[in-house]
Image 1: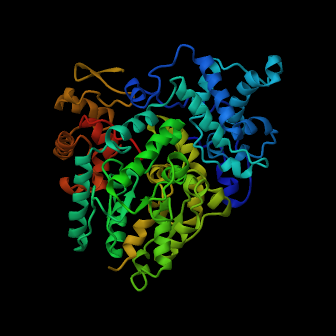
Image 2: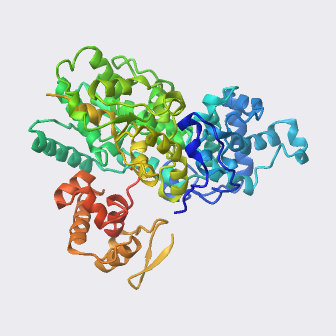
Image 3: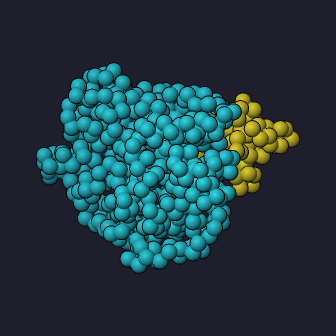
Length: 481
Length: 105
């Protein structure tokens, strides 16, 4: 793989407080594109199985519909003054140097179409402010709106408060409506409907994983920690990202140990064992439908509380739950409830008093990566830090410009965690990798399954020797039962 | 779907080289797929992992969790990566004829 290493990101804002724009590399990432969707997947998720014949008219009509429905989108189309404050804030621009990855340039791809069909500028095509939604434009949309991880770092720096992610979201919605989407995202959404989760783990496989973890924990610790499945009447429904019960098993064990220690009855659901919502990466109808499954599972099992696991996009979609699918007042407040919030509430109640051995984590110098979706979109900023401080002696922050509201995307959020665009993932992951390197930490904690899949690869690629893991993993190590 | 000439037969694969029909898998095909994953020779250690993956997949319709794969085969993750440089989910699953695990992995 060609390294995107001509761009001097090392001097980027984020790391040394010195802003140095990367060298511009026109079209550097123009050829890096996601695989297109397959008919078997799009058919399963109510999208056209191929590009519709009248795609241009339908795309423009869809844009018109979105402009009506989402007034913010129309404002974002109109108010940008192209000041450029966003240009060097995007990890994908910083990593690739491709000026088409300036957030403003990406958004211009839609603004030109907007001006062409919805403003008087469309009457003067020669001025270059407006452009047809033609084949060339569609291809640019498909390439560059899938090189944006909707992380919204650019929005933090926009003096007008333009949320560029909303523009990417609208572009993907329009493309989906005419039958243009990526294989990765559509395949994952289809798997949720057929199996209950993104990974496609059927119920028997899920139960087998849970039974295996029970015997494994018993063997290692002697504890009879349970990983219950489909248990009606449990107090808590835990909705984890399915990756926790597949790859990030230390996080899954963390949930089990936590509930075991607290003596709280809990369960997972084989109807909905997925917190992550890839509908968010595709279109509104699927966002809503995937989200609905959580409420249906919780009501079917009769739980009192739903707790969202360590998953960034899950939390962004999760906080919309009442807006998307109606009131949750048949559950015990607070809701929606994140596992990190739950742990902090338990800490404040004194539930762990005398039962935490911080030295269990002394081998780690821990730093914390704010997932863009849980931190910037979901306000979950202090809770993970409070947990880490409560269970670890050694914690170090990355530089100010790279954390909390200003965090950098891992490089693979919102539908980019797919191998065919690995150069984009590694380029987009560079600012985060450099900030981690700056700390010298050997444990990179985070609360997102996509980050947990991407970061080991990007840290390895940029030569940052660090173990990546969950926050609850650290808690589980420190709890004395 | 692209067709790939593997071990003398035309096999349908996806863009990432994963075979589309698990029933078309054979040991000969595995050896051909291995070359694509920088595994020159399939040793007894490789076969142990491959056979475990296939048996598990036939029973559950999904690859086993990584932790279970390590425990049941006796190879830790490092050893699995030494056997299959592109890892358990990509390299090992591809050679064993399983679909590519996708999602947040």
